[in-house]
Length: 437
Image (cartoon, rainbow, N blue to C red; front, side, top):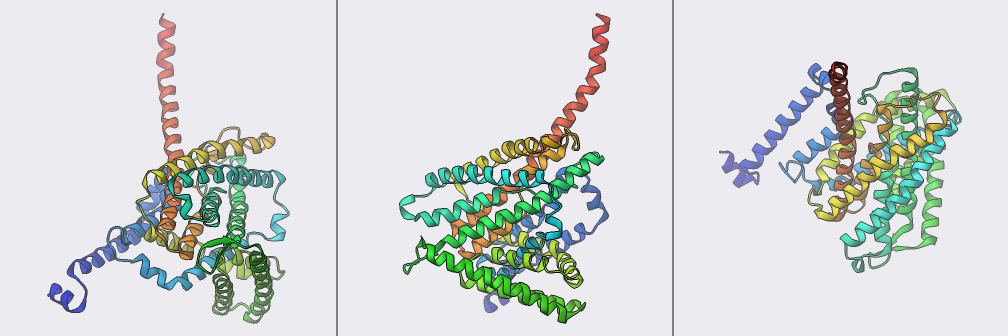
């Protein structure tokens, strides 16, 4: 009967079973996500990192996407691109709201120095590695310099910063360790702003000519940036007025916020600019306007941060192109080498000035190796701007780099911990054997 209905109605029995299996999988994962047993598993560092880092949502999206079950079609999903652009605008506003004047003025100089030095090194090394590998991977005569810049800057922007989450890193929470954890979380917010700024400015440099090729056109870039800034200022002050009218009504506040984000994302899409950048500027302006209602609005919007992030992690899994080839794997390895070796060194050397206030040795020093969640939003934004196979391969490289940067330090720390424990166990035996001789 199902097969007959599939022949008549265009829905095959196999597809119906795939949809049913996907529904069962989603319900099972939802039940697991709310179970007490999962919270116990989160105490295990690798499992906790996978869950809190959003990688489970990417895995679910990959299963439901065209690569396995084909329940969610990535191409059809891109038909609702305007809604997804609004979601990117939401992310941008949330990031911009972290740049409050009454918060940034208390940021210590060492944190500014660490974030800026990390960004400079990531740009230098990321650009060098990306240009080298991409020039070997792709035939350069088929692509313009502007097209290459777009791919290079995306990979470089995703190199900047680190994940703010520190609960999955198992350390003794001494006062010094807590101070270091706060620096990690605060620095992640600063780095996210730097990454979006770099991506937005470079994205504005690239324009399309009459033939559809990506080219540089500085006058157009200047106009686009001025319009983006003007729209951010107008919507920031306009949002302040509308929020006063909304008073403390949450539905009205949500309507105002969605209107601001939709307008910002719409202008960005019309200018062929990333909605992340313009929305971040709007969020900065809103956050720095005085008023208790704006503080209530900020707290109200931040409550949806995890839900919006989960949607984009799921979307990233659907849009993945797993066949990245040998050059893609080489690029992932090169980016991981930079993350696992350079970033912890920059962190320890920069924070060494305050060694008396911070722990000398701590697993928190590996926190800078983990990829920032904003990298997923940047990768998804790249695919939304142009859904080519290469852009999906770049998204896969970003996701694979993020997963490896999350898991490898944890696995290495567990190995070193077990080795240290074994050395402590073997030490009394060696001491006894030495005393007998």
